[in-house]
Image (cartoon, rainbow, N blue to C red; front, side, top):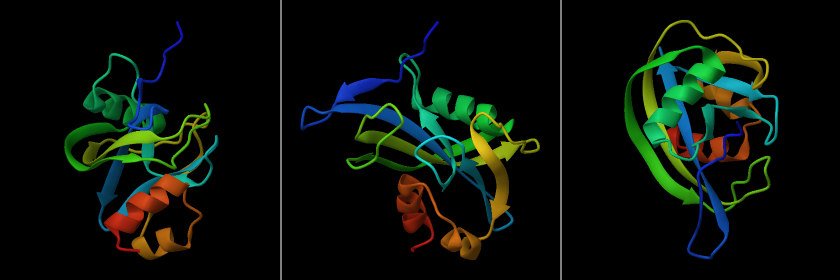
Length: 144
């Protein structure tokens, strides 16, 4: 069975996907993956919302798929359309739901999704090549 991303058209009648992202911070460090697929760069745990899925269901699924972690608590940080954000399917824009998450478990790397997973301090994040949409989110979070 092929799972399709939730899609609609934006105000400009362009196809638009829906995505979720997890901002996970523990002890002043943020959990990031180095993406193995385009768009490349360091990013928070994230992905498309599937048809029939709520943003919260997608959040729980993506965090577990990409890291093995479980979301214990979450709160919405950002909800907005990012017109320039594209995905490997060639769709842009994306409508994002970005959550601050408290997690349980030990992070592990999913080699299908990422080259590596690790914890990074804000000054280290500033020196990384971030996936463009995560540069946008961390610009808001860390005031870059």
